[in-house]
Length: 160
Image (cartoon, rainbow, N blue to C red; front, top):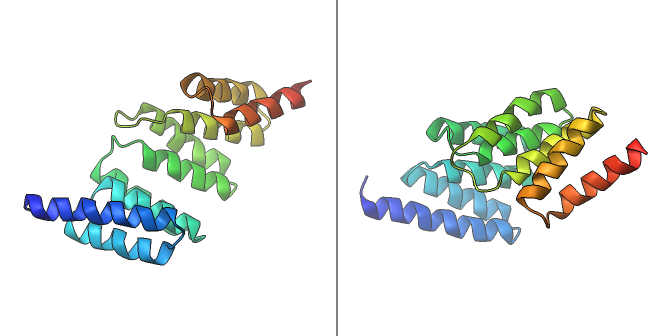
């Protein structure tokens, strides 16, 4: 693998991401796959998973995140994403270990997301003390995170 192929793969990933953010999911999928053909990365598998999720293909999204983890077990994003996808499926107990593993990842810049998602899980399980703890942790890490603020407010309302 030469530096040129690696750079081309990253360029395709960036282009795919722009299409994804613009809502052209079919083009994003095509470009992510081309990027992965040139040089498989945890990021490209994870973002392809995001695109599948936007298309309503939750099981495919989970499968792509698992491929990302195989490439880079220290990349925290796919663990969080699998947890979030399992929450969407109502599989709360199954989501917990993925979210906890995300919090242990060395290569991750957004630990507030798994804390927030754990808050969602514990809210659904009516374990409000644990939910409050994770929403508060999310807000310590990202004080302006509106979803965590909303989650905490809902917990406070339920406990009163």
